[in-house]
Image 1 (cartoon, helix red, strand yellow):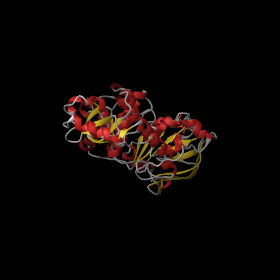
Image 2 (tube, protein in one colour; image 1 turned 90 degrees about the vertical axis):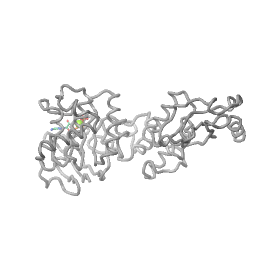
Image 3 (cartoon, protein in one colour; image 1 turned 120 degrees about the horizontal axis):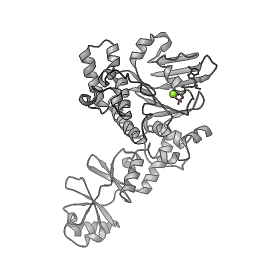
Image 4 (cartoon, helix red, strand yellow; image 1 turned 180 degrees about the horizontal axis):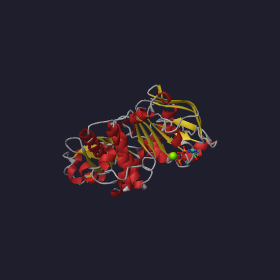
Length: 384
Ligand SMILES: Nc1ncnc2c1ncn2[C@@H]1O[C@H](COP(=O)(O)OP(=O)(O)OP(=O)(O)O)[C@@H](O)[C@H]1O
Ligand SMILES: [Mg+2]
């Protein structure tokens, strides 16, 4: 969808910002460009919409060399979130969001309806925020408007330059979450620039780690964190890359343990017998619908009555597909030795610290084999 072929950019003063770059972003894929300041990320991005022209090489969008396309029309096909947001200060939030549809000559009512829809999508109530001016918004809200504006004309391609850069870490994580949810709904080809490795691995299907003007490694987040290609990459991703891998590896059904299960309305004596037969000290307790209620210990069951009288409620759970980091966080928060894993309200099994460790090792091996994330078995080999 976006393709760089041997692209070099030398600025008139002799600075080589990009040096012989070749890579591709597939249709519907999100590639993050990550690297230190001044390594050529923005330059790379601006060659896609012809705000910067390559010195040599070609950039293709949808198979067409952009050098042969009218720059204005090209830019209307491409959503662009610029570094520092860049909203128009004298236009309302609604009109800012409707910028590109207006340029495309949409009828005013249609452009505004579209803008309202997009504001809603990025979590801003159009009634409240639409009439405001950018200075009446918080930094995080401004960044949301920047994303909404880029999406307004339903572009084929989205270029995002540090889209969540200007906000504190908490808001940034919130915006990232929203963006991931939105992206699941609106599948776009995205090139996203960041200097933050955490953001890069969180958002990218693949990440391109930049050195000076060139890509040092382009691979899935798990592979870059698990097996950095060069010492530069290893240093850039940091000594805690093992920990970072927790956020890019999902909890899967194959990772789970299946402890004995007791029903709320079951006689305690019968449940206790089953636990003893399985050599278990506790059971997960489900309600009549099979949804998670909590747990019960073997010792407590000796008191008799029904399981429901003796069970503890358990709130330590994560959905199937959640990142291991979330599961680990919930485990720590509840000071629990396991977390339940649910599909909707339905109980699937429990994740224990040992299983979590196994899952973490699996992610590296799968990525090294080029298996897509989320579709792998869990036989693990030694960590790289
Ligand atoms: N118009 C220009 N003329 C000369 N040099 C430029 C120009 N624009 C950028 N550069 C240089 O090209 C290099 C790459 O710049 P670029 O803006 O692409 O970096 P970046 O990776 O986006 O950095 P940051 O993370 O700070 O935004 C830098 O050394 C920069 O000084
Ligand atoms: Mg930049």
